[in-house]
Length: 269
Length: 143
Image (cartoon, rainbow over all chains, first blue to last red; front, top):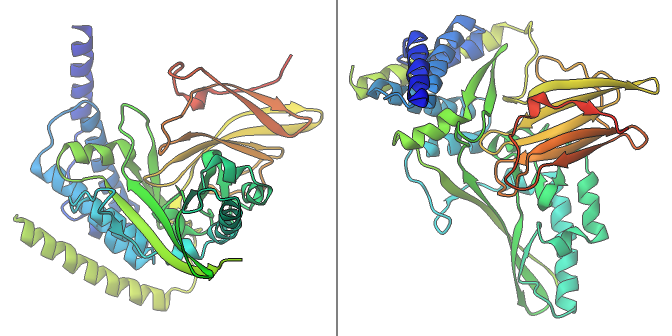
């Protein structure tokens, strides 16, 4: 009874904060980003706060509420393209496309921004050295992950831990690779990721497929209270991870797997 | 209003805004605000402690969009973050304590300052124990 009363109280408090749902979030976010119109951003933020509150107490969402959330994500697609983050734009709009790609049928994303990041270049060098060592010792060299403990412990892999996290990115806990913080385009698409390899021998060469598999989803309110600050001009728009996750329960978004992949043929010596 | 009409209004608004932005870009040469990266990290200064003439700052930094990394960062000078959550001071130590893509996250129980090594000694509750509330953490000194 006490729990039910508490929920009713929270729901009433939520409804007291009721805010109008803007018809075109793209327009308001654009006005905030380009012309520093804080009132436009506040209009969108108030609606997001209200919907986040509703999601936390599981109040029903209207069709307009759902449509607004989808349009916010679609606005990221426009905004992402506008400011030069096509990968992030593609991921955000795919979330609301409801395709929900599985790991065996992931959404393919252009790997260029990953391949050119210093942390990936250095990890590839270290992994190639490890692949050759494994092959020489007749051990598995066909499938290697940057998170493999035996690889992480190699002296040439340890230096990946000491790279500059702002300009180069670095290896962190559990062998995960962290995007350079200053590389906003990559950081926006993937804050951290694992590099995997599939290597085949052909004559004197090795053919390696470099692969990054990631999952696009968000933490629910029940687990964490994380949010993302999206810089729009002089102020930030706060997008609650829990609300993004709740969109899946509302049937307007679906988590999905995405993959970046490239091939390299290199010398077997 | 139907979905199609709403879409037309949205796209028209974007086009008008694009045109206005282009005009403003052509005529405005200087912005009076700092331009941040598109995603601004969430920064909280949790505690500070003075030891041997140095003041250490314990900072919580959350980065990423759908894949969040939550870390504790140690500075031996005041980081003075700007409105983009950037600091010109280089941190002396950092450790990730929660990764949304990992299933092995533990809850932090205590954060000790090792001023000799300029490091943090972070202690965790056993698996499945404790309540995740990093904002209440304090920088502790070993007795």
